[in-house]
Image 1: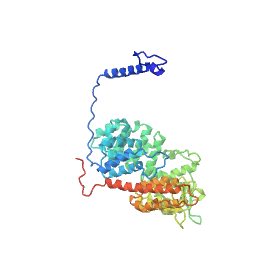
Image 2 (image 1 turned 180 degrees about the vertical axis):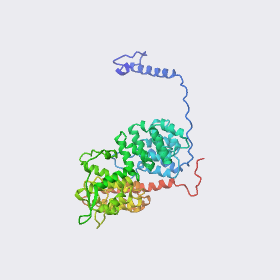
Image 3 (image 1 turned 120 degrees about the horizontal axis):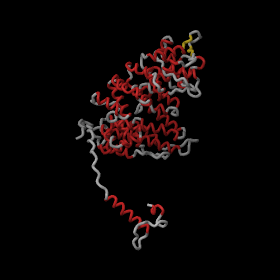
Length: 537
């Protein structure tokens, strides 16, 4: 080894050198002989225990065309190199999540030979995991126990479905899995048990609550969110005295969304004392008197006493109180007015932004569509006032996208379509991301019209690459033929970015090609007419 590192010219290797053979060749020959000798001297090791067979998956196999399509999608998951020009070819990487969801929706199982590649893809992209594990089925967990790289598959309750119940296991087995399982397995078990029996899930959590770490208690509390019931209130009230500030805050948030909870009533009394309707003015106006202190009771109920940097204490306390207050109580507080009438009331002394921001977060927390609708207002349009600007004034921390998620899918799509028609695409990207796929016709047409207008105006095409990418994944594939006219290369208007015409044509060609590919993928997943028996042999 020393001779190899230093070089045979500096150190003669301690090996026999045949006549006519150089020292370096002799050293390599000796290394080769030593390697063979070492390998030949190894004794066979006892064979390891053979793993149990993989569980069966009785779902039907993919049609042959869809099988080939999945192979192509997984082989191309590296995607286009960052910063490179994409050309007109569809980006298969971005179509994989949609394909996985559609395949699982048809009830197919993933081909056994492609399971390793599918799990590798899910390991690299967390957004793929729910759909990939659902398609992989119970064999994903079987493989995950044999390869640490795929441990993430063990977090799901049954074949990637976090809502799957813990099976037919008895109480003793559930208790053993709760006490001995990995943390991710315990979260999945609690979530599944809560979906089946909320009270039993809470009782299971109570058996180890006092000995759990603070970060684990926080995650377990979050697992209660989806199936919150009135029977959870005593447990959450106790959690308000937890030694962890994050746990206390989460418990307070959960209690504030629980109808009829004592905490919600306490917060309502505090908030109603701060916000009142002044009937002595010429027109009704809301007056605000923010809290002057954050007392012990407020702190126990989840009000954080220290505001973020640049925020006043009193306004910070007020927003937290109003956010945690049930929205229904404001109707009685303001003489029977509905959400739209309350939002339209003027607010004295510059408190409008803080008050409306708090109502906005309350509407999102409670999924209250009436309040979300009132706070969003009209998206604006030709000849109409810009209500969106009124609803979200300068300095507001409000997130219109979160408000939109509260509305039904069809209403959300109409609102965003009207917003784009009035204000263009620059402020609509995140809104588009929360709309149901495929986009409804009014929304899809509004996006395409806005892109067409941007092209005709000679706009910088790369500024719209994000929206174009969303359109490739979210437009209804049936729109492809109608968009063919946009693929033509047009003359660049005066003042346009150099080469923009070619880039716009290329982008629209890619859009049309991707829509047609999505239509083909859907057809490949659709079983032939009359094929009722798709089970595996």
